[in-house]
Image (cartoon, rainbow, N blue to C red):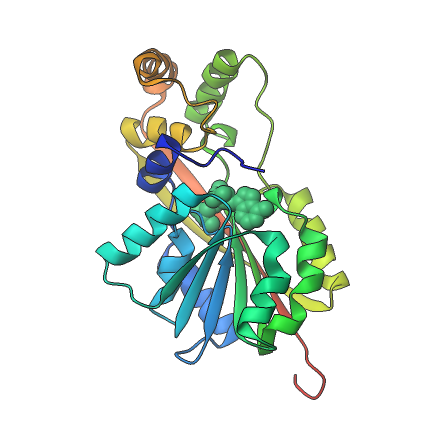
Length: 267
Ligand SMILES: C[S@@+](CC[C@H](N)C(=O)[O-])C[C@H]1O[C@@H](n2cnc3c(N)ncnc32)[C@H](O)[C@@H]1O
């Protein structure tokens, strides 16, 4: 079922959604000893934020996403940056048997799921991944900081209030970024036979008003995104709510669950 990552939302997503700092890529490379002989699959790749960041460090990347518009943007971005080792597949978490058939036993060094696991049946997904992974390979579950309206700052609380008023209900969803979800993912990975380590990459960023409002639009489904003629009113009400709280500084904490498979005879 579509989660609404289509149409104009894709442009907002591509333009305003946080990317991943190089420190995140380095953690992945180190955790799974990634190199030029390796293929990595990024499930729920979106517009390729993590897929493309990894593409320069491995032999090939495969980005899977059920939203054709997201994939088309990722593919265009790869072309614009001269990336020639990325393959974009329309599919999702339920397509692991087909991916296994395509890459063969141990055909992947790593499967990444970045800011997307909350849309998936994670227990079934994790249980299906071991045969696809090479020795020393593994799964990385990445969450990319708290949503803009869920942070512990005056500007974020003001944004939350204005948005809640606009949608007509409190905004509580954490999109898998909260500790409880991360604990559940960790337990499910262990149940599927993985040894799990956690790492955090933290950094501070300052957002412009445009980035703040664009970031909000990037998180809306296509059905929720206001029509272009209604956008100025929402932009104005968000701007009015937060402007007294500038500068918009955020502490971003990228959490990684790094799950390694211990194959028989291999440690
Ligand atoms: C918030 S975006 C994350 C995109 C990117 N990985 C990132 O880190 O920015 C979530 C993505 O998950 C995708 N998605 C939703 N349901 C999915 C599923 N069942 N299997 C795989 N991807 C899914 C959406 O289409 C969307 O592109």
